[in-house]
Length: 227
Ligand SMILES: Cc1cc2nc3c(=O)[nH]c(=O)nc-3n(C[C@H](O)[C@H](O)[C@H](O)COP(=O)(O)O)c2cc1C
Image (tube, rainbow, N blue to C red; front, side, top):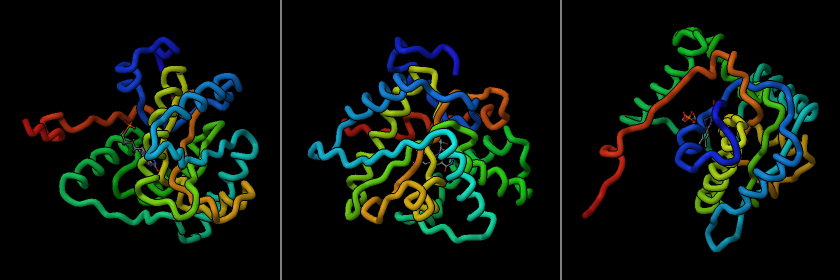
């Protein structure tokens, strides 16, 4: 990511953040990790309960975890996410989903009817796109959609803190598909429910997927101003 630095202003950071899906192997220095996670702690939450339970996994342990999830996927293990992930989008939402997929697979040179190519691209999710770090965002058991909002706000705060420091990231629902494997790997029990993961590290700009760019609906289609 270019032009990043701690002095990056807020608007620039919001516009510069995008999903990075290919990373260099070098780790983020510990003081920088400490800074971004300390900043994310300042995310607001309902009644300030701070329901996020972030678990950071790096290096060899992360690679081993990725291998377990890829093996499960290749063996046909049916995903069993803690929160349903089988939503189908319709109408404008489906169009946006298609457009994002078109941009991503187009950048990767994967054709729409190339099933093996798409499956392989999907499995890159489970390998964290080669990132040296991933953070898994759990919630305490029994928490639900209202606390999930807080985890979303936490996630964006964290990713923007990374952006200003030149760190690329990708929020991934795909990392929540095999929560049992992740809990086992981390020694957690079912008191932790997994909502999403975020892979992060320094972008490898030579990875084709990183050329993908998606836009947004114009404000006139989004904001309803009742003045
Ligand atoms: C909660 C959440 C889950 C996501 N899950 C995935 C995922 O599993 N795999 C992936 O490649 N991208 C995933 N994304 C990234 C979105 O595709 C991306 O944010 C969206 O297309 C907008 O692109 P941008 O992040 O580059 O602005 C996810 C994003 C969010 C916020």
